[in-house]
Image 1 (tube, helix red, strand yellow):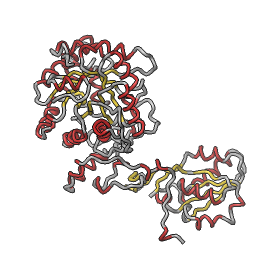
Image 2 (cartoon, one colour):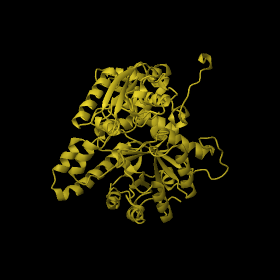
Image 3 (tube, chains in turn cyan, blue):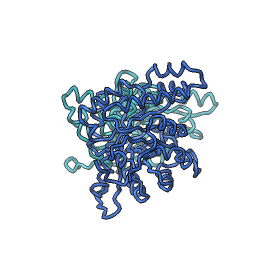
Image 4 (cartoon, one colour):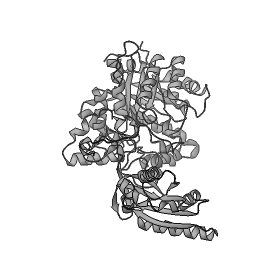
Length: 226
Length: 311
């Protein structure tokens, strides 16, 4: 799932100076699950904006809506008859959703209300963590199901660096929380699975063309195209 | 063992001598004289001098430029290269540039994470890791090929290939395997992390010998003299992957401030004495951090002076 977190409200407010009628658009997909951009968060943000602008003595209308998804054209169509009434939109979708909304309605100023963070999981309520960097060429088969690209701060492919202590990555002290050493986990898992041989084989260079280094990516499936 | 490159360090090891290397950290500015001045202090006491590559991710004069200065002085440089800041294009390009100046030693490193340094907001590269860098240098040297497949007709690197190993990082049991992987990749010499925990180091060496790795790679034991008890505490608590036993901190704390530097040197000499008796230790890498002037004293008092002439 795509994880996002709310932008500081001051940053959102700074984008909205001079507008009179604003629509806050949520997304009921990933960002709703991680409690950053669903209907509930739309309502909270809209209320906060109303309070802020009324305290400033400004007359500003802020309306609310949340779409099934903002990354599918059919759901963006839901706005087609309404959007003319607004002079700016705040989208709480991930970066993909914000852009797709802006592509569909190119005349409308559209601002992001969240920072899109990573592909991750819900570890527990209120705790989400990263698992995948969408590098386009999955290596999990040889690393015991734990991703070194994501879980190692140096994305090493041949085992841990010299900085891990007590199973913790060297950046732990800098980021102020315990970051597990990805390669420590991989080693333990391979050992558990009786697959340590995989650790002994040096890895080839990774082909980063499948990652962002190859430019914006695209998947074309002729078998499912209309 | 016969040396296959013009590296002085390789020749010293091939002749069966205990090797001595040290390092110079370049300045955080563009002054020309700093590295030569440091190197001048130690040149007669070591076989080769490492130049660090933006260590702890702090921007400094580049390692390659400083290595060229050493080379022009007639000192055998060890080019330290981290994969943090360069992709495979830049890495190979720098290796070819180093080759053009007759630089014949490289220490292949992944590098400290950039968040430790003075530009914590920067991007990192890590197109490859240290093990893959070792393989890359070996391929360029032995096969004359670049990673992209281009075949060099002339001007192949002639490099004695080194790597670092930290016997004290976790998980401990992986550390010998990791060395084996680096040796399989082509590492010919190892400079270890600073050794303070002798017991743990010896346990690691036993694992190294059990796999016969000490016969395939020249292990230079890393030592760093403590300037004072503050430094010992800092290294113990703040530097990742360094294991400083309480006994060392206590010993330094137990002498008056003005004598702590001397005590630090004494500890270092005792460590060298103990390490040279360990089977498989082929030399010493003395990292006197911003204290290069102490290297001659350490080398002399350890009975490692004069350095052998091997041409």
